[in-house]
Image 1: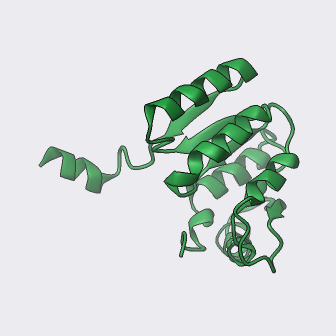
Image 2: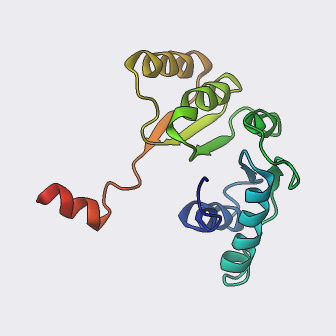
Image 3: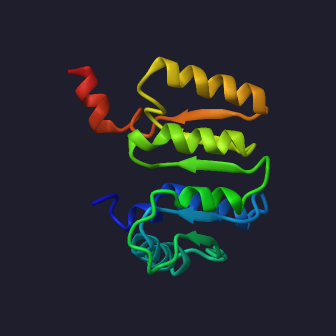
Length: 156
């Protein structure tokens, strides 16, 4: 289960690779619960980005190790590789958002999280209060907002 291994070769991966090429960001870290999915993502990115676009450095820290079947806490190791002020983009199953976002906030990381960030108002309030206390930004990404299929459905 989980996202198709070519999903990381999409907009997010190419955007980060381009930002690094332009000198806007330094390192990249890719994390999943499954090492085999991380390996597949690296291979797909190499083929669909590195093999196609000029000067796209895809060097990154990847977690967990390729031979790890399942590690639901791999994000903690990824956070440990980062420094206060770094930015995290979270595209994980909805029910994992709260614990990952909160751990990032507590580590002083800025967060962009796919919607819905959380399902309960009390969790939203806790994240907002924690972000304010730690001086970080937390934003929600709405990737389907302008998708023609969704716009058509709304207009019907």
